[in-house]
Image 1 (tube, rainbow over the protein chains, first blue to last red):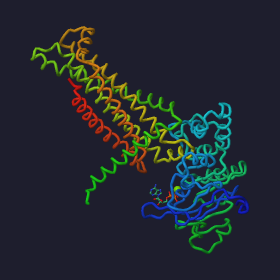
Image 2 (cartoon, chains in turn orange, cyan; image 1 turned 135 degrees about the vertical axis):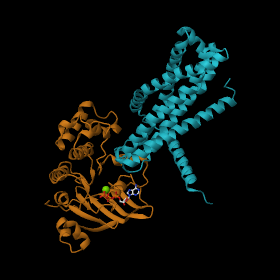
Image 3 (spheres, each protein chain N blue to C red; image 1 turned 90 degrees about the vertical axis):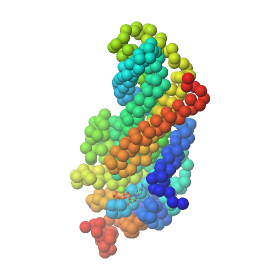
Image 4 (spheres, rainbow over the protein chains, first blue to last red; image 1 turned 120 degrees about the horizontal axis):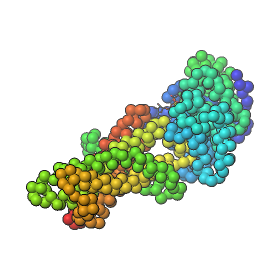
Length: 251
Length: 257
Ligand SMILES: Nc1ncnc2c1ncn2[C@@H]1O[C@H](COP(=O)(O)OP(=O)(O)OP(=O)(O)O)[C@@H](O)[C@H]1O
Ligand SMILES: [Mg+2]
């Protein structure tokens, strides 16, 4: 288990206040409050359909909530102009639940894609180095020429992670990084998340319901139940809770 | 007021498609033009549909000639065969056939491609990495179909006329030079203008409908299939509606002689 560190004294990377989001008359997020501190790995636990992906999409502006405040690195992102939003997005890495690799492009082109908006800022050699570094981070340097369809599920996940790491983001949002993988690969991915935190000093929100992953990566845990942050604490605090709603996750 | 559901659905769809088209024109003039991606799309559209366009235009040219000959012979107007075939090919058959083929091949391709990108969150991923997916995916594809359809239709015209020459020679004997000269006897710029104009419109409609259906695709493989399918149906319908409108207009303005 991770020796969780306490970050609440450092600066806030993401601040969410009273966030509300519903689809039709289905209320998914109800007055949700959440802070992510700089350097911290925050795990968000919740059962399927509880609105975890929606929460992450609110942070990057893919879903617009009805009310509430979302601040990323001190900047209010709701209602931001496209141009401003893109600047914030450059500081955020998003690992999609479905990987979202561009399946008409090779692995290399997938990794280079986030660099597009920087135009000619990088020369060929720099881009090659960045691609190689990213792929080495996930120990798949030989896959650059492959198409996503030729990769296994775990490899896809790792390539998606490599793409997320290309821009060395300050904040990384992982949406279920280990779901659907075997226990060994899951542990590898979890360790990868941990080493990213150490190497790049990034802050991260890790959405998951894989308790083993939480054990390895999390400094702090928030339980998303009934649309709001139901409980918060370290792994041992929550695991020893008497509340049946919390306990059921740790059995 | 009570409006029945199909009518309401239709109006809603028409509204959404109009808004989508409006957005196309807004994004079109925003900076960062994705020129390479557009060329790539032009290339794909050409490669995918050229063989089919060639085959159908060839067959239509030949069949039309063989079918028309007896009628013209009975009027003693066999020498008018090249003109008649050329006019119907260039004005109507090549543009519409090309458009229908592209609606089937390109429209469904775009619908399925963007649809599956949508449901696997690739479009979200693009947006998050700071590339406007509307510019990168939609604008490039719509421009590519709009530019490529006229070219394909012109190739169709040429192949159709050549096939018609072959068809005429099955039972007759005429030289290529003479046949070509005769074909162009009744073809004026004013004939070609509305014919080419409408191929631009066909291309635009096919691109927009394919992209619209793809970008609004519902979750799941079934949703992707449905958007590909409805893209073909709607695009083909639009082709005929546009054809009707353009023909009516050119008739009203006295362009058709
Ligand atoms: N675009 C949308 N339109 C309508 N409803 C949506 C949309 N996106 C999400 N929902 C609904 O919001 C709820 C939460 O969805 P979400 O994807 O956030 O769940 P999740 O917690 O990530 O679940 P999982 O663990 O299965 O990924 C679901 O009930 C879903 O039906
Ligand atoms: Mg989810």
